[in-house]
Amino acid sequence: MFLTQKPRLPRNPDEFPATQLFLLALVRVSEPIALTSIFPYAWKLVLYYNVGRPSDAAFYAGILIAAFSLAEAVTGLFWGSLSDRIGRKPVLLIGTVGTFISLIILGVAESFWIALLGRILGGLLNGNIGVIQTMVGELAQNPKHETRAFAVMPFVWSIGTIIGPALGGYFADPSSSWPLMFPSDGLFAKLPYLLPNLICAVLLLFSMFAAYFFLHETHPDMQPWSTRDDLKYTTAHTPLIPTAGSMSSAPADISQESYGTFDHVQITNKPRSTEERKSLSRASSTSSSTREKTFTWPVIVLVTALGIYTYHSMTYDHLLPIFLQDVRFTPDVHPFTTISTVAGGLGLSTQNVGLIMSINGIIAMPVQGIIFPLMASWLGVWRLFVIVTIGHPLAYILVPYLVLLPPTWVYTGIYTCLFVRNVFSILAYPLLLILIKEASPSPSMLGKINGLAASTGGACRTIASPVAGALYGAGSKMHWAALPWWASAVVALLGAAQVPWIERTKNRTAHVRTAAAFCEEDEEEVGAVRKGARATLVEVADA
Image 1 (cartoon, one colour):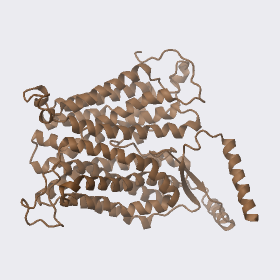
Image 2 (tube, one colour; image 1 turned 30 degrees about the horizontal axis):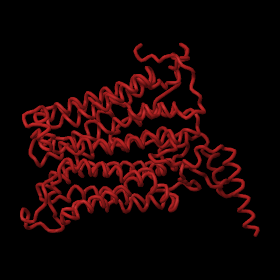
Image 3 (cartoon, one colour; image 1 turned 30 degrees about the vertical axis):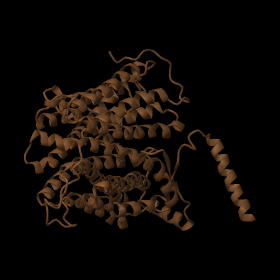
Image 4 (cartoon, one colour; image 1 turned 90 degrees about the vertical axis):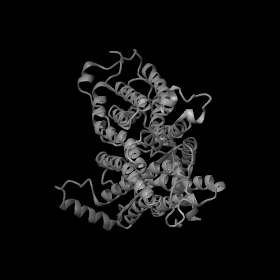
């Protein structure tokens, strides 16, 4: 078989798999680059195709963006199951080839429907999110390595979301930006959006070759030392449901210790009083024949909150580049426009939009890696969740009023809005996952709950872009640019209205701490430190 590995010795489980994770990261980073490069110019691309009325361009752009997510959700289960039978590496390579073909089709498409076909084809052939997640788990054989290993891929994805929009925005329609280098009668004038897709395809091709020649197959029963019986009776499996419905962010995985940051999350159970233990004993004796319910009320409410969050978060990502590029609001054009009915956008170029979206990714990284663990440790998971949930609508209310700023203050206003949004959004997502994990009746039920959370989030992301685009078109017709933003704020308010209905599990608390301080420590040393700390506390109490 063309993917057969060369004979090698089993890897030392005590050695951190840095090289293999680096190769896997090359594949991982190329995908967000390819998938997010379309964000800055999707609206302009639809206008170029002249599909429907100009006011409907935002709606069609939403369909173009959501098509990949929906197609990926349809085939996610298939690719995850296939990787269990033929191996992780072949499915990973098929996914990269599918994304490569999708980029080429999108670049050369001369109609909206051909471009849409390319996006759908790329999603149908791509099941890499779940497969890569499985490969990371199979590479990190030592439990001490799991936290660091699972934190690598979210970090790499963040890097890709910085590079992708920059490439898409900077190299879109090059004949208009650099007429001396790209003449008006050349290839890139006839196909104005080929260049960014071509650059992304070359990067993807590089990662594809690196994975083909140097990445090892991680399926435990398909190693060079495996026997025929191992291949017949395989026990390895890919988490199937979390592979579905993903697009611009990683799937919800509440079974891992890493939540897209470099943090360790620990769920602890406080000691129960004697009366509580007796009550639980009586309850268990009377219902011993009844199976414990998986989808309890707290789980359902929190999963619903996750769906609401993913919906309005995706609308922000879709609306922002359109608003930044829309025709600049001027009082002369709309003389009767008041502060409550602002119209139009900021009139920025596609290149500037790509740069802004890349800087947005840079802003997100310290929020994710520094602000989140500090705030979670200071306020606690629940208090911080309440604050960011109630304050989240503010991120949407502010944006449309950027048009009222003088030109010298526009960029300051944009980056202020992006910082506010990143603080609320990036903090809310891991907090929701932690609370869902805390609400789980049992660790053995995390698989089903994780699947429900991922499917809910994927479905909400899929419908978010078209709905937000349709609202943007309606707002343009009414000269009311705030309509789609305020609609997202209303959805965020619905999420905040759920807070009083969330019932927390008694005697169970989530703690967030930085993983780096613990990942290299020996368990016995940690235990000794804890004993010493308890002894010190006793001495202080006696004093």
